[in-house]
Length: 117
Length: 114
Image (tube, rainbow over all chains, first blue to last red; front, side):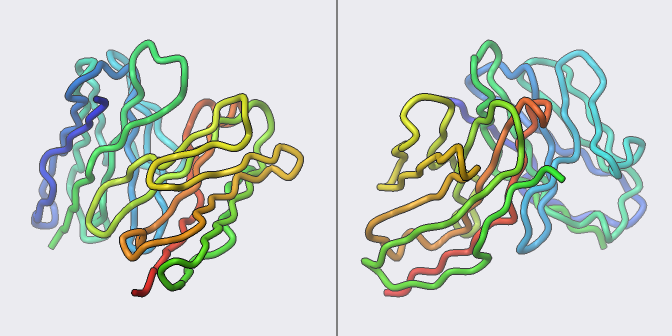
């Protein structure tokens, strides 16, 4: 149990276009989902925290108008990279915290590789 | 500043050697501690976690970690590594001071040679 999926697994887009990445908890309900960014050979950096039915909370330095997050249901959160630029190329990973769980454990998706040309 | 520090960025060792990866954190309050592994081309997987109780926790694939509160440490160990343990290992901490957010260390790349 506790499987998180992401779609797409990789995407190539042209500079100036927008890309949407989906994160789904497949077999549990998630009160909270998180979006991370991972550069090559580096650790995961938290971009934002997303709670179902409310606005996402962004980390310092993350542009909320550029990285739009929607958490429409207890099993789905989306990240839209708007007006993408080559510097947005990265590995985007989501995680989900199980609804009703007493712990803070997060379950991670497989990640989405975004390349902006 | 609050942080999670992993002492080694890159470790190379032979099969059957013992592995120990250091992790220290600087958060106050109650902490939950995790070790994650990322195999080449795969997503993060939980190796083990500590929430409370016995400070020596055992995880999957023969890994264990010891929480030493006085040293703010949570070191990962495996007595005898295999080639398949080649991966990136991340220590992560959630504390009441970090508003429930998972903070990752920089990661340690472990390469096990046959």
